[in-house]
Image (cartoon, helix red, strand yellow):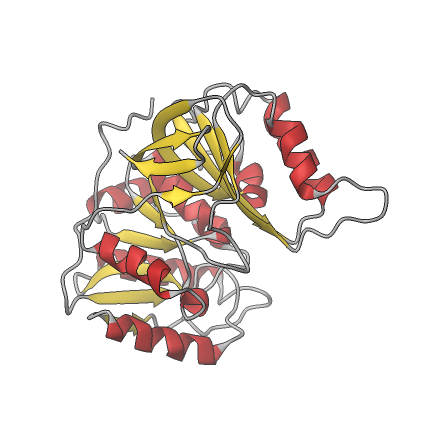
Length: 300
């Protein structure tokens, strides 16, 4: 059973360390964004390396499974690399975990892995192994983050305290648990697979992009039908962007209230993370407090 007391923390970073960018999912589309990210990483006192396959293309994937798996393995085992950031999301990260003894590799090479969206597959695999990781910007979105969000990410990588996040509380008091962020669509497809961590004691943090309200309804209904919310202590909701409703439709906000509002647990919405806007980093596995009355997510 997952416990917030037995997690393994990768080493914090020091000025001059090297962060490596890899592409475990979709093929890169915006080369200029990567160069902007390189300058940001340098301005924070770090070096940015890019894996040799980072700009590969194989259909909609950033290279073959073998190339992307090789990149992940090299990033983990090369002692020159102190943290790993995904170049972008898209699709394909879960395919890498079909092969290799990743449990042993991850346990023997704990490093911060940073990303969101499709990178949920890697973050959830690490959570299943009780290894901390970071739900946060990918390289191509790094330049879009405001200064406070960049400071939040890079300060955390050095071990500094994490400021709370403010959202809109739905009530039901407070709960403490271990933080499990995810893209809702990706996470829904991981339910019932070996990548899904136990949900007992979790504070879920969910976001999504481009999903119309009825599809969000369908996914949350699946979670309800299989009992996935029963052991969850609270739910933190980020941005559900580009969720266009057709005529005679509920809005995404109405769907979230309808499908989650009766769970009897603290829920906070409108938190600043997700696609198409500020994507404040969230520490996967860290003990947090969710205040459903005050609308605050705080690290304990």
